[in-house]
Length: 150
Image (tube, rainbow, N blue to C red; front, side):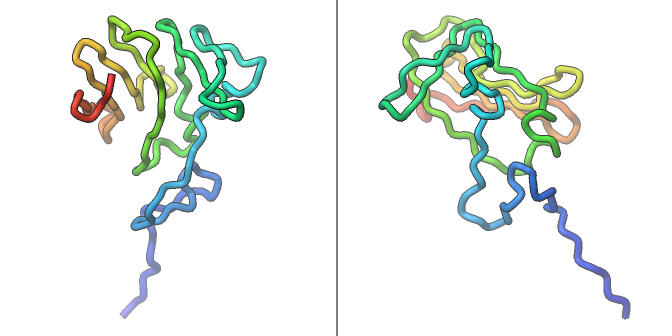
């Protein structure tokens, strides 16, 4: 009988965003989108994004205007592609509810096709989370008002 080496389909390079995660772990490794978008660097300018006072002296917050465009290519955020499992946690406060749907964050492939989009839809009072499936088409999960406070 011949022995076959065991292969892990979950192998990632040690530098990947979820490199130390193992199936069954309680928490995923944190990944800092603020740093990846370079929002914490003074010279970085995104139209519609401004730095404002946070909830305490130690916290910084960012104001996203209606024309804010936080879009980056996937390779700049996840060089090995989107991880198979992840959690996205953010806290924000609306000064006023926008009238039209808008993206909180958008990550695209080389042809600018969206691979990950998180949107607010005030008309339906929902948060929409879209991620590309294995065929490259977006699949969307909608969180309604029972899960979201506007």
